[in-house]
Length: 564
Image (cartoon, rainbow, N blue to C red; front, side, top):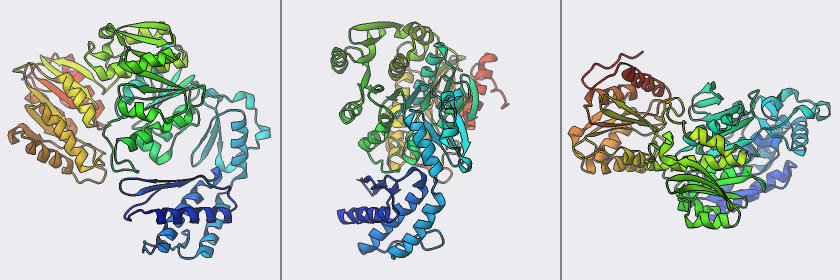
């Protein structure tokens, strides 16, 4: 896919690009391509289908076709002409270069192996060095420069495992972890990917943000697994696409303002369009699980043809009732209990207030995450009795869901730790934290640098709604993403002041871990501290600090434990 930039898009330019792509595909003897041109708020996303063993060459064709269209339209783009780049102004010269690219990349062995795997309904995972067929113990991997003849393989030794995809704006990691706990309770060794790493059961294979295709490949190739739960973030979808061609189910938790301005995503509809890509891994025997309380998801659901299941806070919301009347699967809350229903059949999974993840039923967004995970577990074959047992304990131990909606009492100071990385997430967290009259509220606030200024200001606006008594502004380690050090905190401060917060309530402490210590040193009994923690190095340090404070029965005024 090519993202255009810096040129006003019109129909003539898009038409010119189409003509050049079709022309070059014919010259290269490729199949007639399927072309997609998506004009959005600023630029356009241009893509076309190409042979699996010609994808790098196809990117060269795409760039050449766009530059050639610009030249034909009277524009003067930066012309790339060096060894390896096709000449936009000379079709014959460009063809010579592109034919050389295509010859070097061509791999009949890859195409034959993929065709043989697909004929047996086996998944294929491909990266720069390796092609693998199947998953877990049924996975066989081969170096791409030495691919075997399909006829020589023992295909009976290869198989897939059930896969669930989890995407959305908020709640992905919590939902992924809970669903993995359900499948482990079912007796399956489960691979799990999320923004904190790749795990098989509780064993960590890799640490960091592995919510894209690279993490999925690591998880699916892990020996001994019986199932895989894959957090599937927007960035990986838009940059690399789906890691798998087939999943048993997929969840979209919700859609909210986030990541505007990248890869053609400029509004909520653009974002929903991107998230619904998970439906392409489903067929008529699979299930797409959606949030009925999200009007955008309800609207976009009309555009997909795969079977649906719906969750909502109210089990008797009209959409859920109608869906059950048609025999469909739903999950929601009725009379304080979570109920899983399919048609006329119903399972009571217990009182919401008895589920630690719900914070006594007050964390409504976690109730929604629970309902989504319950449907997915049901689709995968987990028994209701197994789900009840997990729901009664999951979240009570901080290790169940580290960094996501953890509530601690430290000497009379209430501390809430969460990820809360966008306006909706922060609003939900602050609604939980809102202290009683006369009690103080403090907040740690920062944002990744790849958000637009408007999104950063909106986050500050949400914080201002709750009038905290202290806000400590931070940078996000490793997430400056083009911004200078201190630039985001300065923008947040400016917006907070504009919205009426007094300067003496605002403190800037760029290092996230030091900022947490600053707030803890400020606290007194009765305070509520809201700590969205984002840095992958800082999260375990903050967790260790809070655990040490609990262990020493810390109270406000005591010295804080020294960093380990």
